[in-house]
Picture 1 (tube, rainbow, N blue to C red):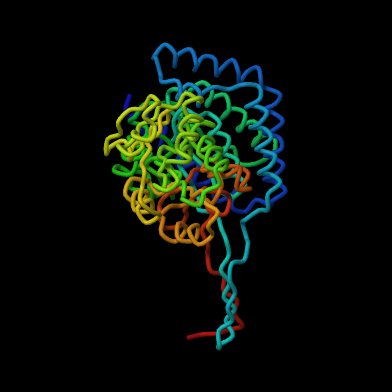
Picture 2: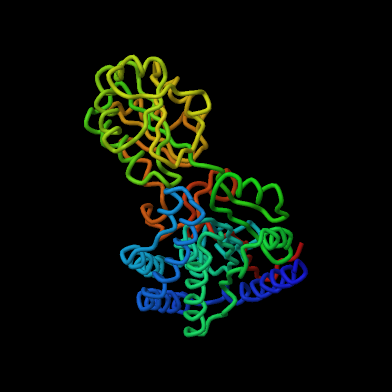
Length: 421
């Protein structure tokens, strides 16, 4: 069985490499035609997608998966329509391939240009959310890459149905069918084999829990772009507007708890805590959020139901209706806590003090920082990228939401007039 899986994965990788050489040369019009065809197919096959998703949901409930995981997995008519809309939005975005980044003319007359080009073959490893199948496929195609998709067992039927629609769109548009391929098994051995194929695959992007990402990072011979988890925080400054303090904290935490840009911590200045924390805590409690608090917060919220917070809580990605709260003496302590406990994902400050906001921006080490806005906006679509391939907390090549430009590298194109050295 393992020999058969090895053969399947290697064949897929070889086909992807050949397809990538062709997709890199596609015109914008060719790529957009395939994307528009895919959007139509998604809408036309709503019933099929809901049926296949129902099979996944039935299995997930039988396995007693956590509610946030099931929520991520679930398709609705509205979500399917949103996926099709997202595909059309990517089609409408500027094509990054061929964009000139820099130009230099040397004293000897050499004209040197730095030009954006596709990475090549991108492998995406992901869990639970079947919409990732479409997001990754369309972004890779629009940026001239081929991609290999390996989804989780929880969404196998949904992913398979979506991958078949992608293949139909490619065939109908005359594009290389192997530009997008789904590994047809969830056997972990297939993932092990994919991570070895550095001669065909140029980049791996894992999307999922910390365990998956660490496994991929530890076992890959291919460069990995990653974020381990989303331990995001809101800091309410002493100069915070009371209404914004409540609305931003509640939205960051409770608008959708199962996603990586949901806030897990609330740090609040001691001068603001007495006045603002009761209202913030009450609003969170009304959303069903459990409050894990330090001693100072517990004293302020003595009339509310709270749970003592541990040191570990402040570094935990709950993905659930839980938030850790800590009262800090000043903005410097807030920044220190965020840099200590956070994962470098998304952090927000609520304040009317522009100097404090700038101090926060400078001091916090994260891919995305916010002033008077929810952490929930760290998302490729919200940033105008159409969708995202993932959110990187790395420092090399890409950081934050990864869209079309982040799926490209560059090459130097040099024009001469006969120069020799």
